[in-house]
Image (cartoon, rainbow, N blue to C red; front, side, top):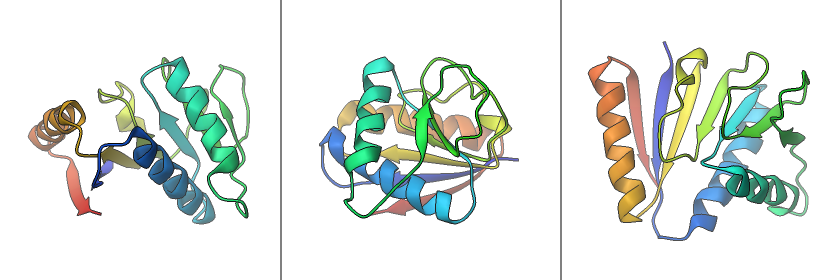
Length: 140
């Protein structure tokens, strides 16, 4: 069963969630995970793609957009379909829980102080809790 972690960030800037997603992907990659980062739309996917190239000068996180081709790239970014292969870690930046989240061993939900993001996060928390998923919450 998928283990779910909610990360509650201070502040209201979208860039803060994006930066934390980059750092989390880097850490998960170092731990040997294959990561899928789920976004709301093409624009958010492309912003995250650019951020992963530049969030830290001494970092390299091999990644690409999930465009349906079979790839062995360890980090994929997408918004409208599941990854084309099995992966074990999902970072959710979307407003909704991905329909396919249960195929992952680990899931990270990233929230901040934006009212709409917090409210959607609370709804997802209840959804996971009602279905018996193991949930951890980290306030950062």
